[in-house]
Image (cartoon, rainbow, N blue to C red; front, side, top):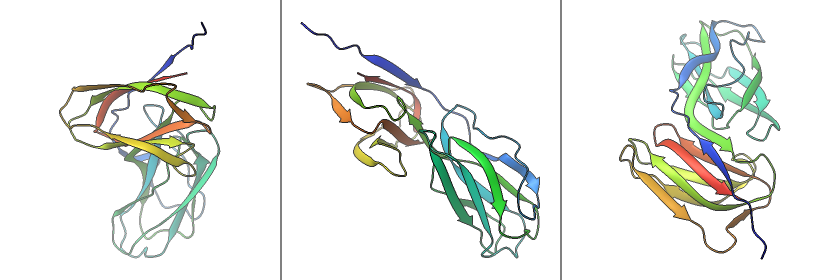
Length: 200
């Protein structure tokens, strides 16, 4: 009788968003100096650009880096005329460059948001056999992508219940769910305390 080895993947990222993790207060003409290139917790995060001046409508900040699988990823975030934080939607595992279209009216900061993602086993083909999720204090949705959140397809979703430290265990029958292009999960900070995915 053949047997399948099941491998666990553990994820725990409760690090708060950090609005100057990537670029601290600065007014770059073009290329900004990076304070860090990765995020605490080891996963991917969306990027937030915070302005303090009020004359920056239409100015852009282009973020270059990699996605959860290590592929090249770029996003341009457009600022408004008000001093505020504008959040991007793409999830960066690393940031290698921050380029501004013009010098901002006052200092800007570039950092991490609350949208998170992690790869389960890179872009390798896997089958998800089950999962155990410890809920955070806020209910939220976990999306299971075949591929990355930017270019893949969400095969299904599950929801945390919002009762802190409550565990949800699920076993997937038969051969499990096939992720032909690799598996990644997307979630919002605070909705989970930790997750374990069992794959073969």
